[in-house]
Image (cartoon, rainbow, N blue to C red; front, side):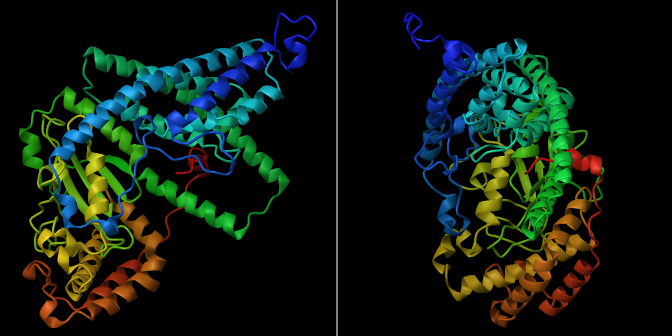
Length: 551
């Protein structure tokens, strides 16, 4: 459109809503061109069904998941220079992110101004809604809001622009639809925002955050985010309530597949609610390994502020199978449960660890010990000693790329244990000198011995006496896996364990792997405990309304 050409119609005649539509279209096109820089994939592709690359790293960096079955003992050694190389790459990435953040902030700010003008002048129409729906606005916000509050705290200027954009979308019924996955490639923004709301609330509730300028700035940012997210929560609830009423009126009957998906979604929601919680670890009947260390440690506001961020991030950032309990008086004292992933000899077992953060954390790594050891008599892995020691380079207890104060955190440690220790298909390879035994009878027999130990110590014992603070988790996990355990996993493992010759029953660590109980006895005891489980109670309707998000 050339305004100097008098022979052409003006903008209001050419476009549905005049210049505002043109401005909005241009801004959204700019955002689309910039999408690849943020999300790692082009917005407009030949195949419209292509999925957006999922990113969870700050700034949209792609992360390659570890393949547990390909990890060997060498994975714990490596070149010490790797740590320096990683640090340099991270610094370079931060500089690139800063430029991206500035451009994103400018574009989001301009989009907010345009939308506010449309709403104030009551000029918003269906054409505006359509161009917004078909743009990359929802997906790009989805990429950003997958980040945790800990990551957001390092990019406050950008996220204040983003949260303003969300606030504008939530103020109008049709714009509110953009918070939900109505179209392919759209994210469930409402779910992501409600997860973030939990993290922000956690941060604001935490004591002793400190009074330095940086902390006060973050508190102000958190308060503004909490204000906006509380408003978004109310608008989202109203929208979902209307959607449920509309669906009920249509009388649409769900298919068996849809019902199964809803049940799975509800179960994921239950597990998510149990991911992070507070308890009295100092007065727990199972004494915390680091209780004496905690009493001697001065703690401090700086440590508390750092842990508040990490705990808040873990409320939504933990992968399935990891659960954390924090002492309600001292955040530097924690207990963790990691459920053995599928495909490993620890599958569905529950392994508990005690964690303590020294006063100078994160300059130094946390201290950690496994407490699922049959009272210090059973060794589950080359890296999990019977005395509780956890060998991991991140913890400084093994060689290899170690703890880096600028970016390392507890969640990285927990994911490493889940993938590289409890997720490996042949744990014998975690012992560097035994890596050559992978694929041999020695390795397979060791797996079978670990199957027996997992059933007895990481399943039966926890079912019989659930660790305090984890009672609901133990019941829910084994109820959810009961059918699979009873019909497939336990019978398969029992047959395999019987193949272990008498001379090999001690395992590679001799007495630290010997179980003086027949597998038939263990199986009988375990099944008896599983049969005592009762279905989890149905959640109240009002609770379900606040948990419409899909985890």
